[in-house]
Image 1 (tube, rainbow, N blue to C red):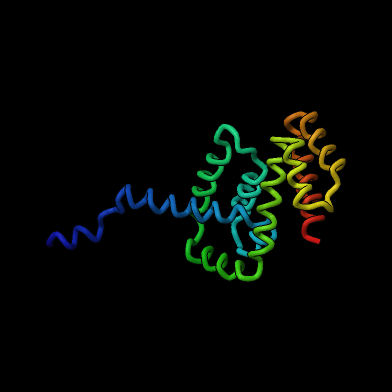
Image 2 (image 1 turned 120 degrees about the horizontal axis):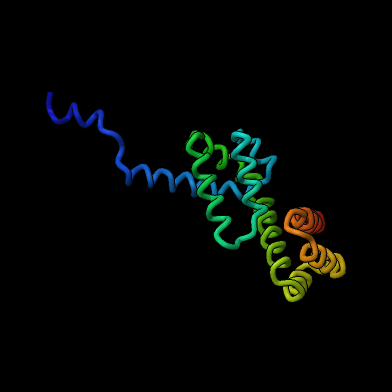
Length: 167
């Protein structure tokens, strides 16, 4: 019984486990750019899809998104890394443009809700087919609503932007 036999049974180091956890968290962060239907095509567990959807809904204040990403990384530990990354590579070839549009819409939506009129003007310069009155009304409704119903107005704004920008 030499040293080599004992090494076979040694647990993985804490550093290696942390590195693997960070890799899963990075993979989970890439998954946040996907829509719910695309996530279901990758065959992810339902609780992971819900966590990713929740991440996209959260504002980027007080580290909420960072904590949610850590949670997504923890849920990713139950998934097969290779299977998920291969499915993402296969799906990226056809849907890369729609993913970029969706990510841009989410970014614009967040900026409009946080900044207001100046961001609405910037979006209208880039996309004149949008209606200023509709964007301002959704912004106003969002800020008048209580915390529990703000997601409804955020989703309405995202749907409006997606509908007009993807046509």
